[in-house]
Length: 182
Image 1: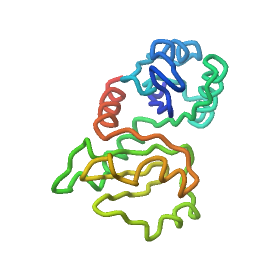
Image 2: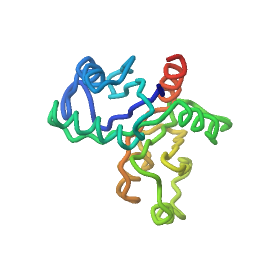
Image 3: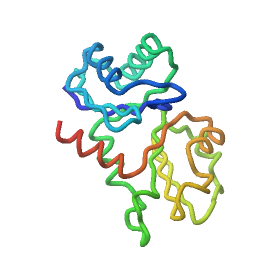
């Protein structure tokens, strides 16, 4: 069994794409995933899956079931514990003199960034905000906060043609801690 973390885009308790976390956990159980644990109201689920299917197949299975059960089309991004550890280890912003985890986010992408998508970001710079492209993530650090930055999910989706969902650094580290203890 492999411990995985799901990142659902646009799922919340009220408003658009409403799904109660208890119902989401039940859905994961019904799909055969073990030890489901939801984290806050953001659509994050930590769970165990038999290693028989790829992460992409598991994402499709969850997306299909969300559509069937709740009527929502919701992109799902899955990462393993090893994936989250690597993001943590390669975070270039931890050494910033004014690093504040509330001012950093990871945008988890549905697909790997292509060379064409990466090229679209050459010479894009909005100081003091910073970003770094990774294989399937974009790390952003906005020292003045996210209220006025351009470097957030919608910007990258529009500019690069990607699909993603963001979580702040504290949430990412909390999910990693929980997943490592599974």
